[in-house]
Length: 541
Image 1 (cartoon, rainbow, N blue to C red):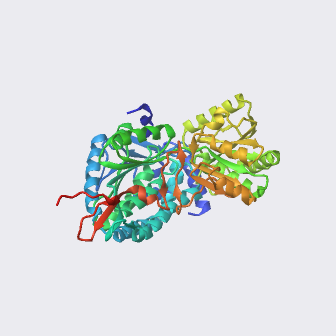
Image 2: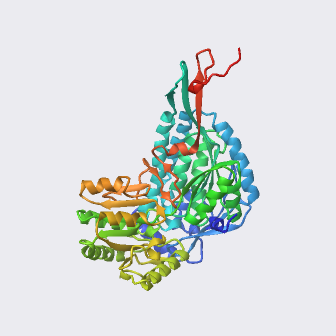
Image 3: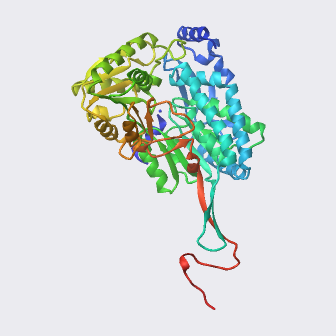
C-alpha cells in the first residue's frame, strides 16, 4: 500500500475542574487515572491498562500505547492495541453479526439506537471530560461533542421509521417500478483525533439504523475515548441480547492497512488528511468497495462591504480559534473587503488580546483556548509562521510558542500575504489565520475557490444579491456554504462533507443515510403478459 497509508497510525463544578488540573500537575510521574481527581475515568469503566479490541468480548494482544494529556504531557492510561489476526477475527464476527442484524425490522433497530443515545446521556459528563482531556479541547467543546452523538442517535430513531425508496411510473401497462434501499454489510470507520467520539457517532448511528454492522478503528492518540465509547454501546447490545454489531480494533499501520484492503468491509468511512485519504480511496476502489472520505479543509470567511462587522468578528473568533484551530472546518483564511480590511484587522487583534488570559488547561473552567494535540502540531505551527514571514507576511498578533508544560501556542493573525501564497494554500492544523484584502465579492469568491479543498465556507453580508450569488452556481464550491455564521460548528441535521480534495463524502443528516445502503431498482409485472420496454418485440410463435 502507498506510503501515506502509514499515517493511519497517527491523528463537576468549575471549582472542582480547577482543582483536578492543579492536583494532576503536582504528581508528574503517575498515571492520571490513579489520581482521585480523575475518578471520572473509572466511572467510564477505564483502568490503568485497557484492552483495545472488542468483538463481543475484550482483548488486545498487540503493542501497548500510552495516552497523554496534551495540557500537561502527563500519561493518562494505556491501551493494548489489536494485531492483524485479531482484526481479521473481529471482521469475521462483525460480518456474522450483520447477517442477524439485517433481519431486525428497521424501527426495532432504531429502538436500539435510541437506547444508545440514552446511555450516552447518562455518561455525557465523564465522557465529555475524557474527550477534553485526551484531545485538548475545552470543557464545553468536549461536552458538545458527546451531545453530537446523542443528537444523531435521536435523528436516527426517527429515520428508522421513514427512510424509504419510491414508486416510479412505468411506461408499460400494468407494470410498476420500485426502488428499495438495503444495507451494505460491514461499515469500517477510521476516525481522527480531533473528533474521536462524534465522527464515530455520525457513522455508527446511521449505519446501524439502516441495517449494517460497524467496525471502528479510532485514532491511536485518543484510544481511551474509543474504548470508553465502545463500552457504553456494548452495554446496550448486551442488555438486548444482540450480537456484536459494533466492534472496535485499535491498532497501528498494519491494522489500518488490513482494514482498508479487506473485501469483507463493504464501506470504509475515513476521516483524516487529504494525502492519506487519497490512498485509502484508491485502495478501496481497487476492490470495488465504497468509501466516504472526510478530509481536509482550507476554509474561508468572506467579509463583504455590507457585513455586520460585530457579528463577523465574533464568528471569526470562534471559527479561527475553536478547538485551538484543529477542526477540519476551522477558519484558516479571512477575505475582507478592502474598505473594511484595516479596521477589521485592528478589531480582530483586539479580540485576540482578550483571549490571552484565557489560554490554559482544557479542563480549567475559565479556559477558552486549550493546547494543541501534540508536539508535531506545535512544530507545524512554528514552520508555517516562519514560512509566512519569509514570504512577506506580517504577524499582526501571536506567533509564539507558550513555554509551559503541555503543547500551547498563541492564536495567530497574519496579514500582508498574497492570496495564492504557498502557506496560505496549505492547511496547517493550528490556530493561524491569514487575513487577505479583496476588491469585491467576485474576487473573494474566486480566492475562496482556488484552494484544493472544498469543505466549509461562509460570507457575512447584508446584501441579498451577494448572498444568493454566494450560494449559486458561480459562488462557493464547498460542501458547506454558510451565510452570516461561522465556517465551523455544523449541526447534525444537514449532510456534512465537502468537495474536491475534501473527498466528496457526506455523513450525518439529510440523505447521507443513502451512502450506507445499496439501491435496488425493481420492476414488477402484474399484467399476466410479458412486454419489453421501448416497444421492443421479441417472440417466437
